[in-house]
Length: 275
Image (cartoon, one colour):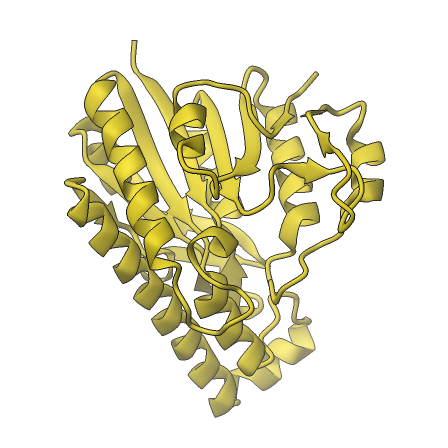
């Protein structure tokens, strides 16, 4: 029986988030090869790949002081603001530029990736996805291609434009495709009990322990307009609550072999579970 997995390569993993527009090319190459090896040796495994925008999209958003949470009054001003629309274009350009580097790495590893830019297919309403034709993604999965999505700016009927994280995109796709597991690979070993001291990784977060875990979690040490670790844990906790049986794994992709191990079902990092 086929197993469907959503895997995210975090922006902090594939770019240097403290240096605008700086990819970690060695990491991209290694991660693509790990994914290719697992898929080649496990034909029953199906994968949807997502990646963050890292120092590309987030740096552009910071440059233009772009926030997703604009009020309705702000939205009216936005529509007449040429600088705002220039920012939307720049964020989209930079997110897509990084996606091109990801696709190059996937092709170099022999993977048949197909990118699905959110900005070209999603319309949001008040930061929530209103419409997204996901049928092409379904067809890609069926034909053993590798769909690739990424954090991006999209048009928003209320706020003119908003940025959607890969986690937000995964949450929407989960309702449609019902993956067995979601894997979130970043730089950190998992969710730390004391950050930035990093004294201990929280191995398991459930609905009962969520509040305690959130007390330890900060957002992100680098520019991250999508909320960082705290937002990630909240979104994933909501998701596993809505989808009993779904597991989410937050772990480091920095160590060679970790992505392979997680894809193959090994428990590393922090598990986010319903109970």
